[in-house]
Length: 519
Image (cartoon, rainbow, N blue to C red; front, side, top):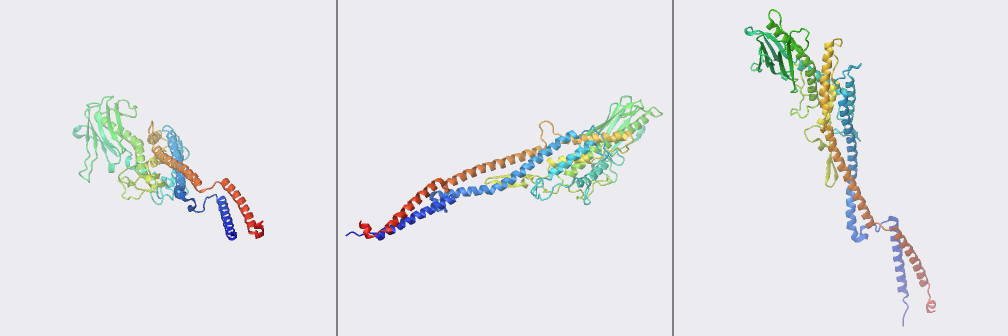
């Protein structure tokens, strides 16, 4: 006799309902979380790829912040470099050697304009991003360049640029303002002889390169220096022996070497015109015309050399002071040379000048001061120091010109004013030349800007590549881990319908009696 498996049917229906209920709950969780599974075990073979993709995305996120900061810093640095280059270019036009126009404060109009550009350059070198000073090297938490007042006038008992320039001027021009070239006329063996002798204490002043004469009436000789007797050292000498009366049109000359290696020739032409003016000496016409000619030549040399000392030599001294103050770019001896106040030699101290730059020092590559890893296999270097030649040379050339005193010693004297104008023209010319880069030559700032532009391009391209990779990784990860919400919604609807039907079937089955079954 067959029996009805009521108990088995009941168990089967209950299991079916539980399975459908569990499926519905899983689909509901998927719809709410948009994930196929709450664990990687639920996506079986795709789990390894999903984990790898998440690791790659995590790596990119680690570099994202550093790349953003680096890009911001490089963008601002690029703008600062661009502006400083504009200042350099504009200063070339502003510094006009022919525009000697003094203002009420004693500066020329060109100096005032250059002063504004100098202030702006210092401001750019003190640029910072969120507390990091872009041109301060590694230790970049403070402005790397001190104030303009400190540079010019010194601070904390240390010498500023103005004082250093004055010391170099005094040391090179000498107490007599003749560039340390002494002169005299003697008559050994009855031959009037004009002697020019250098007094190069510690290398200050002019050096006599050569002497010459156009006529055989004047014999010339150069005698080397003699330092064998330290108590009586003798500088190099140039002599002119006047063997006869010079003829009108005859010339004598001395070639002088300046501290920067440049040379200047002082040439005198013999004349019988008392009013002939500069560049001439009067031929003697008295009882001893040869002796008088030599003495007149001495006076003319003294005037010419003194004028050269107060103008061209003074300008060279200013430039040398600027080089010592701002770093004498590339020198082997890092200690600056500071002349004694009395011009007798150099000071022995090594910490006499104000420290205009307070950032990272050293001879290593400034770019290595700032190293940023922007990808697993890519790192960039973009450190910068305000004392690099590209920046310090611009500061130097602007500051020396701004610091110079172009006021005539005697403003009411035409000769004194002429010396002041000549000195102004000489220093303006040197400053203008140092700031100019003609043709296809790039300035130091342009070279640094090019380096930074390459680094910035690398950072931006790496960031773009990472963003594209991250987007691809996210899209792939979405296909592996996420569900199609529309599809899941349909499945939930189907499951709900199926579950309702199963409930009804189960309810009918559980309410059956033997009588109902037999019907």
